[in-house]
Length: 504
Image 1 (cartoon, one colour):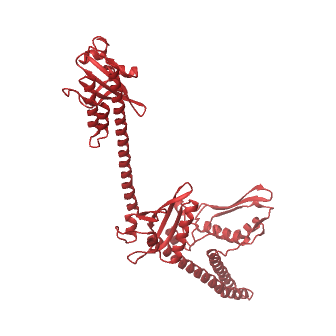
Image 2 (cartoon, rainbow, N blue to C red):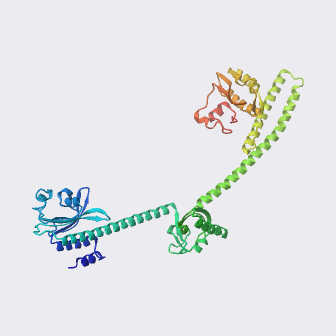
Image 3 (cartoon, one colour):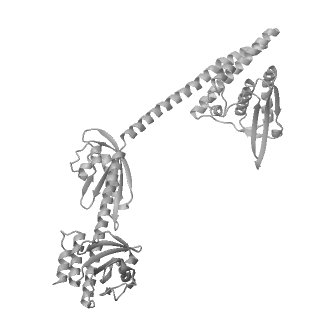
């Protein structure tokens, strides 16, 4: 018989499965070697597994596992070559662990290697002894079968790996398609060598195109709303083919249904040996985001115009109101210089203080409009902080004395030193803080203290501190105290009257 011809016929038969091919090869082995049973085994971690088997009574099942040490194949792997026992009773004899377990009388085996790594064994055995030694030709047949079986195993493993990778790739593609569908992203691929373009189904739906319709590069450019956008897009595509850099662009399109939409497209070149072969990209619909952004810009512009108009109105009104107030103050000063009785003088002084308070409120409004419009300026001049504080004290001390509140000042820390500051703004801040302290303190004391720390040549860190024993401010209320025209809480306004705000 021509064993080579049979082997070739079996291994090239595309209609046979892997198991069928191994069965045929084992059947050839049992015939040429004159042994009953042929087994291909897989050996791993001292375990012996039957991969394929041919036996007279089919008493051995594929997938059966045994400890390697209980088989004669342990000797084969230890020898790293052919092991032949033509009469088991003589060699290896009853001392072998396999002797009592199995009724084998003859055995011939060799290791199987797959891709240069040990896979298992090819072994043939019989329940009867061979009274002649295995011949050199038997060894050749055994090695030939082992090589062909090893090649078949390697081919099967490679095929399984390809199928596994193919399945994994299909799963990944399916998952990617689901992700792009959920994210509202369409993908595309431009083949520069073939000048062909592929669009995903989601991208075609985005442009309201039939999914079966083919899209050419020139057709794709026609969706862009105007020629200028098309020219920019084309120039950017040409640029990335030479630079190899990614690129993103936002543009307006007109869909097949005539709708205007805004898209964002990202492109990535596929380079090989410095030449761009393909450009792949992803596109998403940003119409809603674009419209929202445009709407916000319009609303912001309207709000800024309204704020500007409000600031200008406040500034103009403040200037206009101050003129009659100055007139009232002038008349009151003139009235004070005339002959008045004590009651008339008292009324006149009250009117003067009221006009001064009203003027201060108007000035505060003017300052607020300046802050709001970003035109607030500060004058820097030498200031004696001790004198500035003491100038504010008399007015508030009288108010404190009326409420029976102790009024304390400590200005020693800033004595005998001039500081560069804006005296007007400092006075406003002090007046507001002291006024709040007097207003919200029913009993106890109010204290104005100073701290001054030198931390460089001619540089000082100065603190002006107003403390009182009044109602205090909770942590939540502290979050809004520097917001214009807001008080700590509504109950405070009802109890203490006027709205309060302070310069931060």
